[in-house]
Length: 90
Image (cartoon, rainbow, N blue to C red; front, side, top):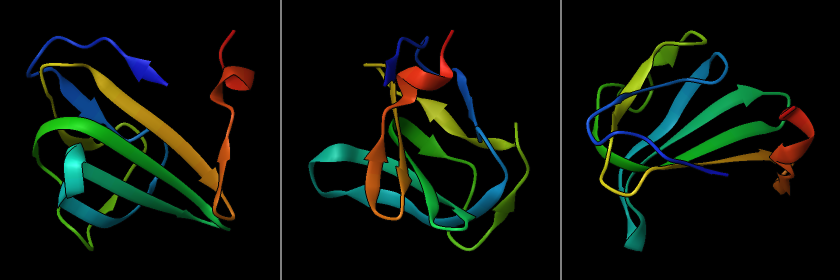
């Protein structure tokens, strides 16, 4: 799911977890990967910078970074498989 966001807007954790990666990744630019445990991981791309660091824990709503110019893309993965987020959006 890609969300429109004002460049520089604060990006927060959708759920509590441990930052398993925060940095530049291939052609995706700055990303963050949050491990929520029980096989659930959230990938967040489209960041212009990070506040959270690899290895940090973050609470739900805790700061992850700032939005880049093209919005923020969020992907939830469960046991390595992408989850359709439309089931969570009313």
